[in-house]
Structures are given as C-alpha cells and as structure tokens.
Image (tube, rainbow, N blue to C red; front, side, top):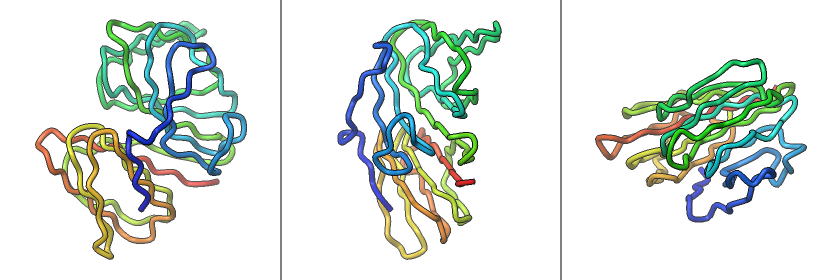
Length: 192
C-alpha cells in the first residue's frame, strides 16, 4: 500500500489558467501529460472556461466540493455536474466549456488512454470488502475517515483528501468507514 496524503500533492496550473491540478498518481510514474497511460488527479476550478483537449483519452469526472458546473459540449450536449460524488464519463477530445454555477469547485478526475487502459470510479459509503482481481486499485477518501487493510493485517487510516494506491491487488482489501458520513472513491484500472 502506498499512502498519498493531500498535503504532499503539488498544485500545477492548467494550460488555460482556469484552475490548478494536483496529481494523485499516474502510470508510468513521472509520465508527462502527453504520454501517460492513466492518471488520477484533483482539480480546483476557479473560473469558467474550456477544458483542455486530450485526444484518445477517456475521462471520468466526479464533483467533490463547490456548487459544480454546467458542461457544454460542442455538439450542444449539456451535463450539469452539480451532484457531489456522481461520476460522469466523457471523451477527452470532446470540446467542452465549463460554466461555474456559483462558488469555485473541486473535482476528482480519472484519465485513461483509450487503447491502453480501462477503468471505473465507484463511490462507497459503507464498510465492506473489495475483491482481489489483479487490477490497480486507488482508494480516495472524499469525506470522513476510512481504515484500509489487506489480508496481511497491514492498514492505513485515510483522512479526507488522502488516497492509497495498491498495484496488482492479489488479495482482498477491507474498507471500514470510521465516520457516519464517510465517502470513498474506488478507482480500478486494468491495462489493455
């Protein structure tokens, strides 16, 4: 288990200046924005504007904090990203303008190179077991506190904003909610 605390994340300004991104993890390690296979990050959106284009990338965005935003696609499709902890998927090459609805917002992002990786984001609120299946597993504490343990009894406690990265999950992972209003984002990634 690799613990990633929010305090250690480095804020990087967006290309378009509309916010900052904090990378939780990527593969390969230290990959650039043009050659990653997968990437998980947290974005602070401070103003309305276009999303950066990522051709060949599948994206999953999940609102964490703030009033959210209206996503306007070039084909006139709209999506109101206003409900917290509801993952929304779209193609990275889509031309998207984000219009903040009120206050600045924070979102969780999974990005996957379409021809090289598949992945999902699932939201958990209750204790349970995540079955082993030889995928990469990233657990992000979106609210409250969680205890994460494996069959070898090692465990880590996550505070809000912390994450754990588990490569090649060969054993079951137990998650225990330590607060009544806890929320955990479970990201599974499989390389093609």
